[in-house]
Image (spheres, rainbow, N blue to C red):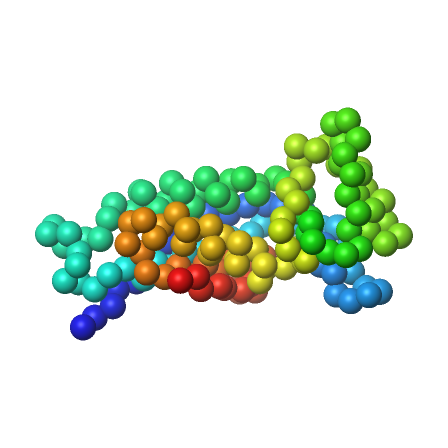
Amino acid sequence: MTNTTLHLHKQNFKFSSAHFLIFDEHRAEKLHGHNYQVAVDLKVPPEAELAQNGYFIDFNVFKEFIKAEVDRWDEMVLLPRNHKDMKISASGESLEVRFRERFYVFPKDEVILLPVTNTSVEQLSRILAENFQREFKKYGVQQVRVRVEETRGQGASTIAT
C-alpha cells in the first residue's frame, strides 16, 4: 500500500502580523511584526480510494480555505488571550491591553485574541492545523501538517489528525 501527501505551499499563503513572545515571568519581546509564510501538507487516502480520474480532489477546494484563513490574520495584531499577565478590556472602538508594565491601545477591529498563552509559531501552526483538519476531514483528508515560518527557514509545524 502507498500513501500520498498533497503539498500546498503557495506564495500567497502568507500574512503580516504584529505580536510579541513572552519568555518567562520577567522577559518578553517588544511588539514587532513578521511576514509569515504558511505551508500545508495533506495526507490523503491510498491510491485505491482515489477518484476514477486518478486524483484526490481539485486543489482549489483546499487553497481557497487556506487562503481565507491566513487572510484573517493579515495586517492584524495577534495577542494571547490565555496568558495570565494579559489584561484586556474594550473601551468603545478600542481595545486596551495591559501586559505587566506595558499599556497598549489598539483599534478593536485590528486585534485578534487567540486562544493561546503565547503567539509563537508553535501555537500559530497548531491553531491552523486544527482548523484545517476540522474542515478537510469531510473530504477524507487523514492528516494535516501545517508549517508556519516567521522568517525564511525559521518556524514550526504541527500535525493534526
